[in-house]
Image (cartoon, rainbow, N blue to C red; front, top):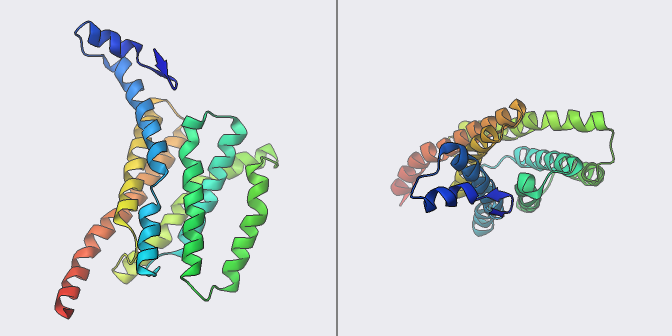
Length: 235
């Protein structure tokens, strides 16, 4: 019995016989289920961050460059998957994450008035190039090079935010829930990538994302205590 590419036959057969499914049957099924769970969760992963900014009307402590690089990284990854004709279940979260990331950057621009000229230039450059990349209208070797660079792009997207948090000894308006979901998603992707025997670069990329998101999550937890103490003294 197959549902969305997931074979439940071996699992239901074992349970029907009163036996617990063995790992060769269970692990691939769990991997597929987790993969679809990531796609489903990705539809709202950045919503808590968006809502927090709108509620406080502030982007204090947020790295604009970091969020811009996220948009670039998601665009490259999504374009590559579309170009390769992969099934939606293998990259679905990228489409939802890209849409939310663009909305998030637009909101950050809105609450960062006045926006610098260089920021507008970066935004216009992205709008000019992104449709071409998403349509796959670039040379194959350039596509491969861009995809190979996406892990570095995501790394450099996190470093400015990590440094901003460290310098300010505060995480500003960063959403704990969004960062937690990013970390959890990265952790699950490491498992699913290894289980489905993805290329080493893909596994390393997922691992790198998990580590950097885990660092930001730990900063939110670590720097939250001093802020709470200061607020109590003021009150």
